[in-house]
Amino acid sequence: MNESAGEKLWKRRAQTALGNRRSDFHFSHSFNNNKLDDRNHFLQNAKTSVASLRRLITPTRNADHDQPGTLIIFIGIRKTQHELDFVDINPNRDIPVYLNPFVFAARSDPFSIDASRVVVGFFQHNLTLIKEGNVDGARANFQHLNEPNETCLGQSRHRPRGRGIGNDNAEDLFESILNSEAMKTGLVEHLEDTTIFIPGIRRDKVSDMTTNIIRENLIRYTQQECELLGIPFTANVPSGFFWDIESMSWQQEHTAMLVINHKRILLVPKAVVSYVKEFDASKYHRHHALEFLQEDHLRCNTRLVQVRYRKNGSIRRRFVTKKDLIKEELPADKELLANFTKKYPAIFADFRKSAAAKVQALSNSEFEEIDVDKLIDHLISKLRALKEGNKDAGAYHALMVGILEFIFYPNLINPVKEREIDAGRKRIDISFDNGAPTGGFFYRLQNTFGIPCPYIFFECKNYTEDVANPELDQMTGRFSPNRGKFGVIVCRSIEDKALFLQCQRSSESVFFRTLAGNIKHISICA
Image (cartoon, rainbow, N blue to C red; front, side, top):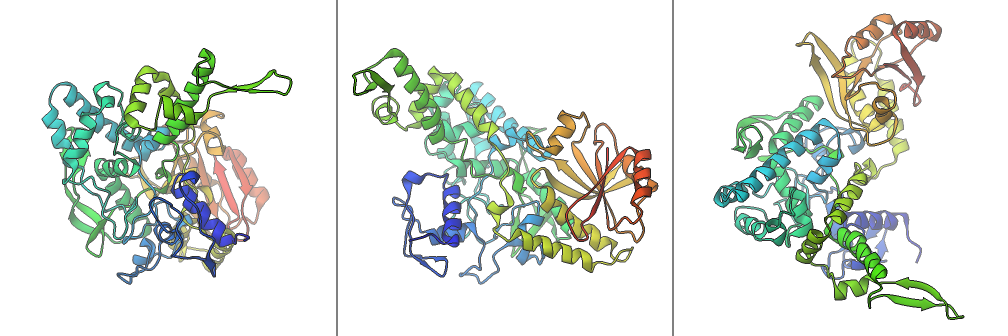
């Protein structure tokens, strides 16, 4: 049977969500109007249906509570995931993406740097307590790693409820880390290393631990996004415990939080979540440890070496199978993997380096499948509906936040409206963090052309007349070595292009056209 477009889409999503473990599952070919049949199962061992996975991946109407599926529907925002900086969660269901400190460490944007600092601080502090003999102090710190429901990330069968790192088994979690061979030998140096070497700890548990540790970072991000989009939040709400890097202790506070149906919600930047496919014990085992052993056995010409001959009797190929190595030397066991790594630490170092090089933000299409051309037409239509001038300036400004997010993600992330600078004397219409990965235009600005640009500035001009020198001077007045020296002026039209080019030359700026319709003119000052 030929696969329909719908079948291919959900098969691809299922493979992505499960880390492409094709050997572990099969797919049903029974479809009805492009909808997966609940009766067919693709995960042979766990008996998980494609339909169940589809309900996890895609926000839908909740059958039990008859509520709209996505957060933006709950709060009445008319935007797609492509226009949002955060993951558009379903408050009634978890979605199978995760927070992992390994991703933070591989990124260079401010949120990731700060989050990484907090997680590293927590874990190193508790490692020090254990080494100094204060095991009870470290054990007490782990008791605060409860089950976080606020982010709605991970995989739960029904309503979000975390994945079992609550007070009921925090002791078991701590003991499994404390008594592991990897901990005793000093092999575990980072929180994420526990998923590689310690039995029972998987990406979901690390994600839950990470959420608790960086809860304050997520609260500040949520407050920022609520202010950006005009989402009402509730004042004086208990925050829940978070790790304070200054006092090296757990703290909590009463603060403004997003509350929906009496439940606290934490928004998470979509650029920092992942499926955690690369930094995985099975990948380290099969593609690094076993491949090293294959080469080692070939070099030593052990009994595991097999030979294939040509018809004339000459050797065609010598090889060692991974199947034989798994059977004879290194089964898929985390304790044995820890022993291997203790003997060959360079292999794990190479694995970390290789995995870090592959870290990249999930694309918008991995969160939401939509017709991008139709979205562009929709945004252009909304722009054209706005009148030039002061009356619609606020609406133009708000619309441009989503448009710029759509155009520049994942290179530019974390938009902030009306950012104050110079002790509040100046405001930047919209600023983005430069989250560009290695390569690309925004990466080369700093690393090739020497233009400092940790932040990218946007000024939105809904003018009836052309922008000119005052607007260009305003933009360059926002620049500084620490904030950055790259900015973008977005305007509705430029009638006298020759005059504008003269203004640009005096301001050392560059001009280009982009997109279609009314998303036309962007002036870049550098």
